[in-house]
Length: 97
Figure 1 (cartoon, rainbow, N blue to C red):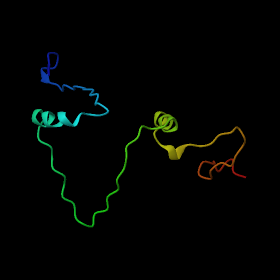
Figure 2: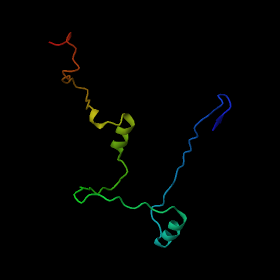
Figure 3: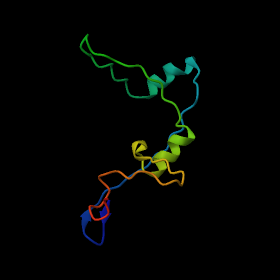
């Protein structure tokens, strides 16, 4: 994109949101294949390659809260209001007994 203030070309970012259908009529698939670019073939993998099949699922409420806070579930601390033991790395040598 031209920038009239700086006389240099800038970047244009376009955000597209696509809503995919939950299901599709199998009779429509050949029409889509005609309208869209050809599919990429499956990559050839060595025979001893270990593959895991996974199913993508929507995150549950706990995962959403964790991702919204900092995205690192390992850093969560349970805080029930009771005094606990501080980690030795966090203790200052001036306060250690």
